[in-house]
Image (cartoon, rainbow, N blue to C red; front, side):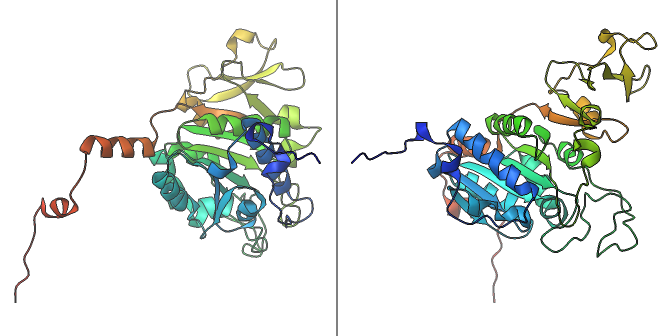
Length: 338
């Protein structure tokens, strides 16, 4: 009899899948994201014993059950806080936060803001379907004005949150965007996020077939994708369209972008902006693009610095052993008499 032992060097995507039945609606974009994450894990050969997936509440929050790693299904919106505690307790762990647009940007918006500004070394993956799926289709923070739902039967009057603009505003040092069905694009983006030392924020445009079907068809549809998306890559010109003749440039004399066509009105290739993923101002412009502009996909911003947990441990090491009693008594103290 031949016994085959799986070693870390032999792990395939299926080895990162748990034995639990995947329970999402048929056709849900979550399946594609699960597939992409498992493929990224295999290509990175992540140690399953040192990998942790943390989630809050919502359809995306089922994710830890389906991974053959450690995982925590936590409280609504609080996954970033739990993940921060895990990373501080053991910085050697590889910690991923799986959240949705409602879980991460509504009740969890405050936690999301602070985990990004602190720069805790986590991969934060936000599934954005612009709706609350698990609780049956109410509008979410990313739902567009006019969205009709059980909680906005006449249409939403609110302006939506842009997930990537929010992340940049919170001080994130790595911000990227991709699409659930763009596997050849999504897997490398996930790997880039994993390589980043610090908080990595990845927004994934994801379809909800039941409550918000085809909401991104104007961006992801096969007949429009080449004109509706611009795939950004560091050091490469910001070109898009089937023939790559359209591009982005700064409006002369203004701090805003415009779409131009090479060869028209005297526009040359030299006029097209080159993507610099270390430029926060450019990233903010790209993150905020809306139709009729193309939607920016890829790594919008990457400018690493020391992560929070590294600085915490360095600070503690520099301080040396501490006496809790001395710490408590070193400032003003009061004696209660009587």
